[in-house]
Length: 470
Image 1: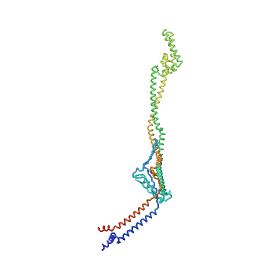
Image 2 (image 1 turned 120 degrees about the vertical axis):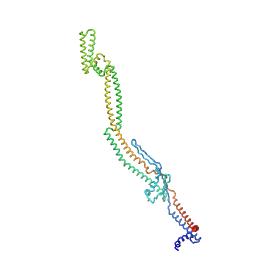
Image 3 (image 1 turned 90 degrees about the horizontal axis):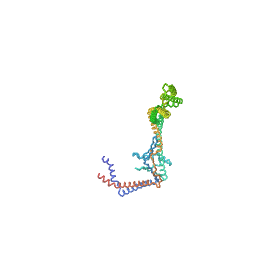
């Protein structure tokens, strides 16, 4: 009894599903027909109301394109360095699609509010535009709806201008942030330039080495002095050879030639020499006729000795010394024909002495310059290092400044260029998509009602067969 009571609801449900109502077939058919007609009437009444109540919508479409090519710029500064700026293609990364970033910006509340403010509308009145991103392209297809064609076009242009303005603002802000970052480092770069320049000036003041060219000039000067030394040595050797030849021809030294010219140019000495020569000639003639003790011979000898003593005294006075050979040469030889050669010998000897002194002075100078060059090697290397540090600091500083200017020109590095591919145009016809969707919904609902009631109509035989077999 208890089991039958617990199974009673299940039996009732089984009988309701399998047997259904107890109405006869004609009455049941009328009931189903009335239900179908009532359901269809409600569905189409709602559909009609939706069609009537829903305002006419106009949809404006426009297309933007994101170019795929990158751009670059390089500024070279002669002897200083270079600054480069480049923007790679926005599609190089497979993980990030820049169109998704632009989609987030285009559909952001801030941008929609700014676009609505241009038209004196609320953001809710503007609506959210629809955006499609076709794959394997750089296109961004926008569409926005309004109650009138003119308003739809205005909304489209307002959204486009706001999007471009927002991107421009973001680009400028990104450049300013990057520029401020570079400027923060400019002070340290400038300090390094000033410090390196101060180090150079201090080193130049300490060592006296102004530039590397000065060090090179020292080496060049030494080379020129050595070349001059070689030339002077060759010239001196030639002069000494000429001097030796003249001394051999004259059998006189330069000093002797000088003494002879001094004696020759003294008139008193020449007069005494003439008298000595006459007395000597007279003595020779008398020796041929008389004996040595003849009074005339003795007188001639006395006169000859007197003249010789006078010549010796005059020579001693003129030359501060007296060489009997010179007096003998003067008394025997005719020096008038040799005067030019002796003068040439004297000139060559004087020139050779000058060359010797000059060569000695030149050797001293070479030694001094070589010592200076030796001491300047380390200073030159140190100065070159200081100049290199200064050039490096100047290159970094100048490149940083150039980078700021180049960065201003490259405004599309962070936010790529976005071009208007198809401009918003005023729609000529209202958008029928809402009407079509409403009609499709009404038809689908009607079909569902008809199919559902049809299944209910034929359920008895099917369910009876299934449940009976169970």
